[in-house]
Amino acid sequence: MKKKSHLLKLLKMDLHRCIGAKRFPVIIALIVVLLIANVWESVMIELQYKMRMMGSLEKLMELLIFDRFKAAVIVLLSAVYTFGLCDDRNSSYDRLILFRCRPGEYLLSKLISNAIGVVSAVCISFVLFSIVLLPIMPLVGGDGMTQYFGYFACAMNFAGPLAYSILVGLLFGLFAVSVTSFGILAVSIFPNRYVGIAASFVAFYVIYAFTGSFPFSVNVWYLSSGVQVLNVNGFAVNYFYAIGIMLLFCMVPWCLCFWAMKRRRHEGWI
Image (cartoon, rainbow, N blue to C red; front, side, top):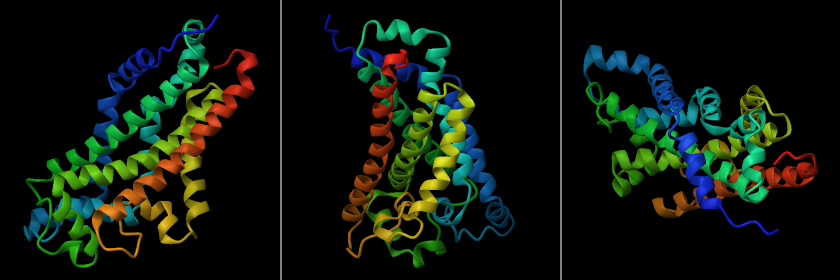
C-alpha cells in the first residue's frame, strides 16, 4: 500500500524535539560562554583601559578566522539533533513512524531539523555574544580589524552590525550542518550518541585538512568565516557565492545518508 506524505508532520515533530528540547538553550549558552572565554583577554583590556577601539563583531570575525574554538563549538552543535535517529531506534519509535511514512521522508525530516537547529543555535549565539559584551565594548570599534579587512567594513555598511552577525552565523552554521550531518550518517550505521559526536568532530578536522590547501574560493576555513574569497567587489556577490558553496558541502553528507538508508533498508533501520 502506498504511504501518504507526512513530511510536514514529521518536520513539526522533529523541530519540537530539536529546538524545543531543554538542551537547546543550554547549548546556546555554552557557545556564548566559549566565545567570551576566547576573547577574555580583550575584555579585560577594555575593562581596564576603556579604549573602545575594538568591537565585539570584530573580535568575532577574528575568532572565526584565526581561533581554534570551532572544534569545541562543533562538539556542542553535534548535540543539537545529531542523535535523533539513535534515540528513535533505541526506543523502537522508528518502527512506529516508518509504519506510516516513507523512509526517505523520515530521514529528510531529521536532516532538515538538524540543519535548522544548528543554524539557529549559531546565529542566536553570535547575536547574544555581541549583546552580552555591549556594556564592555561596542559592536564595531573605532579602529580594530576594519582597517585590515575592507570586506568586513563593506559588510557592515551593507547589513548593519547585528544583521552581519546573523549573516556570518549562517555561513558558519551551514558548515556546522555539513559536519554534523556526517554525525547523522555515522549514527544511522552505529546507533550510539557518542558515535555521532565523535564523527562530527572527526569530520570537522578531515574537511579542514582536505580543503586546507585549496584556493580561497573553495577553502572551507575562509568560506565559513565570512571573509572575501573572490576578486570581486561587493558584499552580496561574495556572500551568496559562499552560501552556494557551503550548501554544496551540505549536500555531500546528505546524499551519503540516503545512500546508507537504501543500503540498510532491508535490515529495518531507516
